[in-house]
Length: 442
Image (cartoon, rainbow, N blue to C red; front, side, top):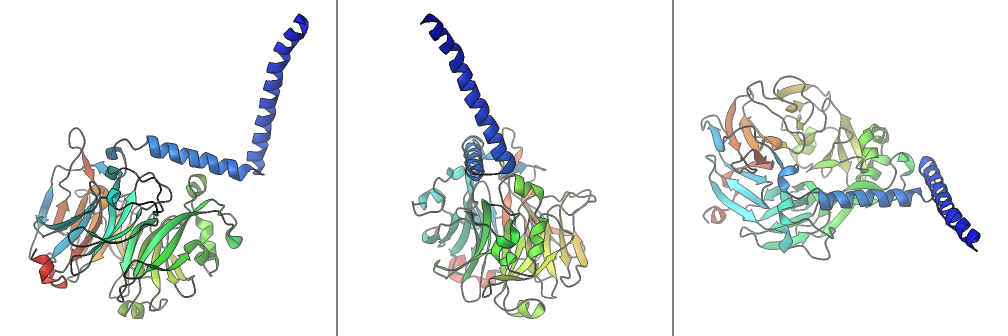
């Protein structure tokens, strides 16, 4: 019996080691050849990593991309030439709080909206475990004449991206909520319909784009009624796959495969209406102009056909916010496309028919201009351009000759030595005459 017991003490560990070794070999073969149950194992692994990052990587907002290192100690309006600037009010959002601000040209806040996401979240929301409020902010906003505000809420560390779209009144009271994974951008049509982007994890195969393996973070164009009811939802991956621009899906960058399946990364939406439709020979009334960061493409989506009907890759990298101009050109924030002095970024005006760049602003050796993510711009009626440089935490208005005639630097600071500045995600110049007098008087 003693000999048998001794043998058991030897053989049992060997048996366990053999099982472990065979399991390792089997697992290696499964991963190498991606056979069953590889997809389940891979999905579980990626989900675990994402959950770990979300729970462990966000102890303070100062170390996230909601904040950047401040380039200056300046705060508020630092440049203002009333004779050259397009005078009005400026709507902007800052990542330090779930607020939107309306300020005068001298930097005075004339109105603000503040509605924490924690006060509107409920169990019907697409995000089941939202981040604490310090990690949530209003990424984009639109103002109605009576003071109502639409706000796109996002929270860091969550996949899919985006917490929802909320309409509030001038007193920051909820009018309605659309608590899907809304992200980046929105636009309002002349009929009051709202156009925005949502995202979800999809497990379906795409026959004409087999390389875009599930699980994918797919983007959707969503049309809402003025009351916030979903009217239509279109898969943007499928819209490409069924179009003549299918081959653009082959240009997805390598890290989209390796990291999180965010193959397209839609980041802008603009409904094409009225004179804009007449200016663009490749677009029609009611179609939508979109931007896709990961494939460096701007495109037009036909909502009825649910198909991409025009697309263009150009000399930009990581772009945001293509705008249609009255002359038929487009204006775009090119986050990584500048290679000279002045920083990584530039704003370009280009002819979409020829891709010719006809105007550029890229800062200079005395004015660093750089934002790796986010940012937008707006061509003003006087020909100047209002630019949101998100990572710089500032808004600037520049003339066609590149003169800065108005500059606002976010006055909020953080960190032990006030070395950090919250990003300014969105900026828009508002004509006071477009707002109801009753709202401005309060």
